[in-house]
Amino acid sequence: MIDKDQQLISGLKALALEPTPEKMGKLGQLYDLLRRWNQVFNLTTVTDPKGFVTLHILDSLTIRRFLQGNRIVDVGTGAGFPGLPLAIFEPDREFVLLDASVKKIRFVRQAVLELGLDHVDTVHSRVEQYQPPDPFDTVVTRAFADLATGFNRCRHLMKPGGKFIAMKGKYPQTELETLANYRVESVIVPGLEAERHLVEIKTP
Image (cartoon, rainbow, N blue to C red):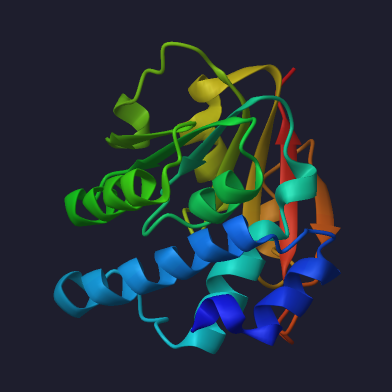
């Protein structure tokens, strides 16, 4: 069971996160739920416990310390990553998880319900058509689009001074050539040898 997995516990501690029984229980629930739904809906290609821990949970949580403000939106959340792990460890922030795929947002809604994440809303929409009642402090994307396209499609969601965070693998040199103001951070995902970078862009 994932909630007894030492890899997860050591990975969380490496990210300065406390693996409390409550949070470990929710992560275990999320794994079991994803595994069941994936047999029917093919939500993700990563279903083994080790891959789930490294590529879904720990990879998602590497960006926690970069979040800004109280309102966070995960654009193109897919099966709920990074939004669901972040919401589990950030119960005092408001999250919106948005995706254009019906089957994926159905899964995310079920996960939010079963995990009791009352501070999380789900939205089925293309990002260009989504008009939130209030703008967001931080917009997060993972495997969503190239940097310029992703930022331009999400810009209307952000508060003045808001932060756009794009999760990337290798240093995205070519994509950065089309941007003017940005910051790149190299991040380490515990247990993963591949490169990971974050690109931050702030609105005026």
